[in-house]
Picture (cartoon, rainbow, N blue to C red):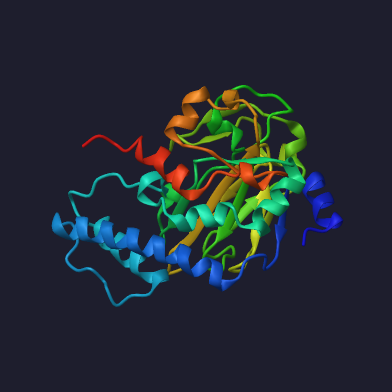
Length: 292
């Protein structure tokens, strides 16, 4: 399933795209979870009078684009979130994706043999023309803010839920940039973290068009960015993260509190009996529900 050549590509480039790793049967339930989240958000916006219609007849790819376009024209529109996650997206479907042997098999080959599923999973609705979702060049480590050490690893797994290319904002990367380790960064005018030095200092930029079912695995020091969405549909994606089991949380600025705020669980192990089940993971999320 994961070839020696693909592993070598990851070690050389700091990322690898595994083509058609996932099938439609796996991804349809993920889209359904997101569609239910869209339903809730649409009802809230409509109930507040911030949009005039619910766009119920639109497709998964177009509905949120229509809602977002109308909402952002409203004079009382509030700042919007560019990522959706935590309790709003939590579902058995997310657990099943995290523990899918096609994903965990590759993750263990890269950072195993036992791996933790990190609780910071995100759905990213890149709406047409939404510049707030056009992220600056960064290493994921810029946003962790914790201890920087070569032995600390966080593996990101990025999956498009629609086909992506430069027109709708596919990921851009700098192959081999992970070998520079954590590089100096600063906040830009949009409060996004970006490298102090020009991107060209670290290598050549490449676009990575991907189809539905393709999966990208990348290192926490790999430089990447997302382009602007010039299409008329939402560029939907979901990303997960794994780390080696037992790795301390000092890679993150929250330290051990990270595991409280974003509950983690053992997703794969040489001893399958040690893998935490859905009910246990869900209970730890419920224990940390926002107070209302």
